Image (tube, rainbow, N blue to C red; front, side, top):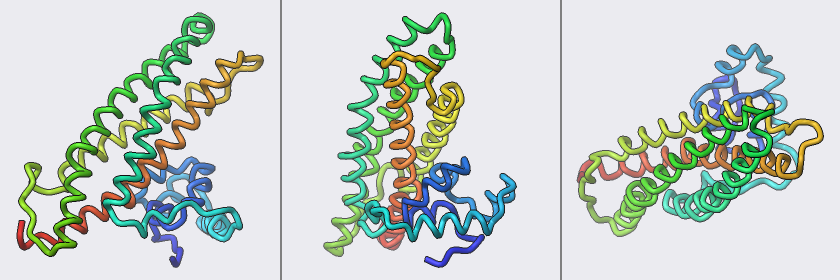
Length: 243
């Protein structure tokens, strides 16, 4: 992939997820706002384009093990991966984090009132993410699989109740933006997940888990916004004549 200042952030991370660390370092949103170009983000954040590109190239050429090349996967394969990996992660980790935050509010809330806001934001995030994931698993992902089956068999496809796949995708992207805003607020309230000096182990564990949850969610959103959704939209276009 040839890198220029016109290349979008989403394309770069989709090409090599190791570059995500660079954008995180510069506080550049690569998941919800992956449509922006290097030129645009550098101008907004007053970053030297050449310096950012150099760092991106170094990340791409590093000897570290590269993560899965999701963009080479079929759309239906990606839906299975998201369900079994990222959806499962939320289901398993969220209750534990809420339990820890509840304990912290009870013990340290009077001295650190920000814990109550963190608890409220995270709990609301989990509720909305649960509904979001169910919509994917019951509506979007099955339709993507139907399209793949129809494509492989060369058969037509009935018009779905949502008419075009771009409609549910638009709502899911709105959800992603909301979650991005929530976790930016949580990061600010936790001083980028840095517990206070001489914190108890529960405090440290809760902040560490929140940070891990944030990182997993960013990757989750990136894969959907920048890889899965474009693949699904392009796949649907192959059926335009029969829909």
